[in-house]
Amino acid sequence: MTKKMPVLFVGHGSPMNAIEDNEFGRAWTDIGKKLPKPKAILAISAHWETQGTKVTIMEKPKTIYDFYGFPKELYEVKYPAAGSPDLAQTIRNMIKLTDVQPDLNWGLDHGTWSVLVRMFPLANIPVVQLSLDRSKDPAHHYQLGQQLKELREEDVLIVSSGNIVHNLRMMVFDENVKYNWAESFDSKVKQWILTGDHEPIIEYHKQGRDAELAINSAEHYLPLLYTLGIKDEGEPITFFADKMSYGAISMRSVLVGS
Image (tube, rainbow, N blue to C red; front, side):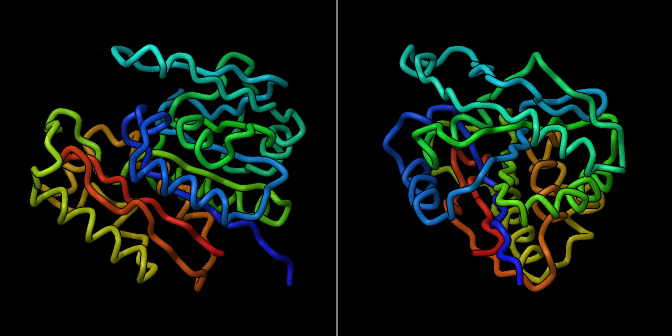
């Protein structure tokens, strides 16, 4: 039987997790040490939203600082991983659900590099990013994930990055604050993942007020659907960094496979 690469969904939270010595950064570092070294990485980040689906095809993707108001040290972080035009073309050929357009303008946004700088600090693995087409419904994103499965057998690590619960309007800078709606929805999603019940995760708009508050504008939630679409039935699931942050952000991360 062919050995498949694991698949990750990482709750990335604040960009400061890239440089702070905290439990989230340490958890990402620990996971990076346990993973088999991939030939390349496909990243799907909450922070690249497009009309239509795009994939980065440049040889040297830039490090994008798509945030403001943070300390100078954060803007000095570089993640000089190479791109992979060959992998990008493979992805374009592999996906039949939609026409994936090549992109030479984007790069690696903080949803990608803030995580990878912890997991693979040497930046010696090529990285390609796939965008989120916000004109499509959640089922489309799940199905698109299903069409990426074969990459796992080609030593490609697929890392999606967002947050299951992400409501900045209700975030508070006090780690003692707990919101029942946030804890409840995060717990429900955990159980649905464990039981392999993906339908309510895809149809989050039917899950009531907790989901409405937790998902908010949805771009941080959609990357999870790619991970679940890629997952094969019966594969082991491990959660890490599974904690709420600032009350309204779930840092729960998911490892599929081993």
